[in-house]
Amino acid sequence: MTDALRVANQVRALPDFEMVEDLALPYNHMGATITDAVLQAGLRYETVVWPRVQHVMTIPEAATTSGFLAVLRERGGEEVVRWTHPEKLGRMEAVAELFIAEHVESEADLLVCAVIRRRRLSVRIVAHDEDSMTNLFFSEVHRHDKLKDFLALIEWRSSSAMPFDVADAELHQQVNFSEFGRPDAIILVTSGNGQRHVVIVEVKLGKYLDSCISTGTGKFDNRFNSRLNNQLALKYRAMISLPSIVETGYITESEHAAESPYSEDQVRRCKKPSTIAFFRDLAGGSAPFYLVTLTSDSGSPLREDRLAPSDPCFPLLFNQRLQAQQEFRNLGSVLWRRCLQLFDGVDNHVAESFALHFGGPEEAEPTDAPQKAELFVRGRQIVKYAGMTCHLACQGYSFTVRHFRDGRFVSVYEGRGDREKYLGLESQIQVLGRAPRTPLADVTFWASYFLNLDSDGSAGPGTAA
Image (cartoon, rainbow, N blue to C red; front, top):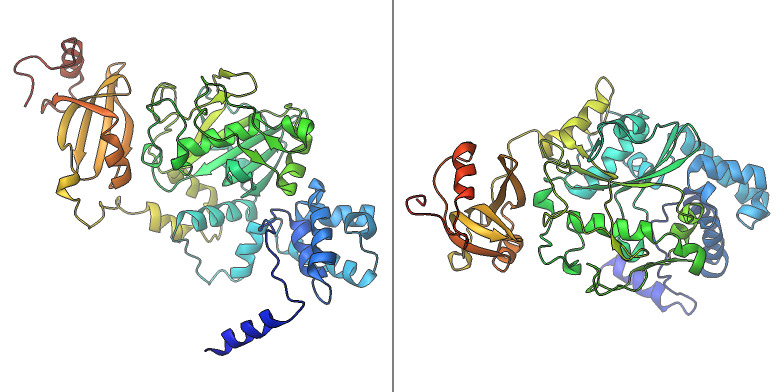
């Protein structure tokens, strides 16, 4: 037995030792984080520290470091922390002042600061996965005061102009929506007239269609909550349910109607105190909200001419409170390849991670060869998919489904070396026959080809390879 295990066993054997569970970490609230850290020394956590941390989390103005320091000085320690001894209150102010000097306003900022001090740029930070890349990127956006510039990169689905002006913006990461999931970033925008706007950003290192799951059945499939279109649907469901805070004290959906695309899913709720406090002032529904993707596409994947509401990878957006399908126009997208320009001319920690993920050629399909017995369709085929006659191109577990419309092919579903998505495709398509070998760029041929398909979807004589 190691020394570490011996110490752990001795601590567990203490008669008054109790493991504290369900602390909802991280708090996404710097006031709570500072209070927790400063009060712990010499105090009983469960009965003294934790209740005060919970109380601080109910003060939304204290969610950032500067906000916490301001309310602590304006209202006093007794009201904010329920503590009167000057020593620990002084430590809280000192910690907050130090963090502000180091530009630490959120827990994401604190994470970066813990790895590297702001002036020690010779140390490398490399983000190797999606979560670390997202946290590093937004921390650098905040550190270099580039939040407004990031908002300007959004390409909106239904408009060429930003639907709001930006007088002020604040960044919040990993806000815990409980059963609705955690958005990668929330940007609270205040426009010049004082109107508030909520911009929710969901991030993937891959392309939009690669990151989605087909909803050809028209029903939300809760086996795929982490797929991008379902993440957007979940955040939509959470935001339209905010008025329930006034009615019940927490966020909850209405019961699902039979015609709702969510009828096969649970009624989702969020009772996290910090999240309820964060959104309480917005529960009246007066603040418009926006859903934005950050992906590696070469062009905006949510543009109206690229993705139709009837396409299987479009997020299912159904207003539970109105019990109606809603035309939601506040959709936008940002492209990773445009984000690096935010840091032109400034020292930053994201350039090497950008090069790692986006600087070279696309990754090849995984080296493990696909199991031949699982390859139910190969090559180029004409298929029925989601009620549309489409062109399917397959190689191993990689595939692309394209629909010909408005004189060109539009990708409606893709998978790149994704075995799960490939196998799921079998129940979603009907193979009509092999596709002609004519290049997809020959739109004149393909326009005639699809126009002349027999009523049963099969190609006429001589057209198949």
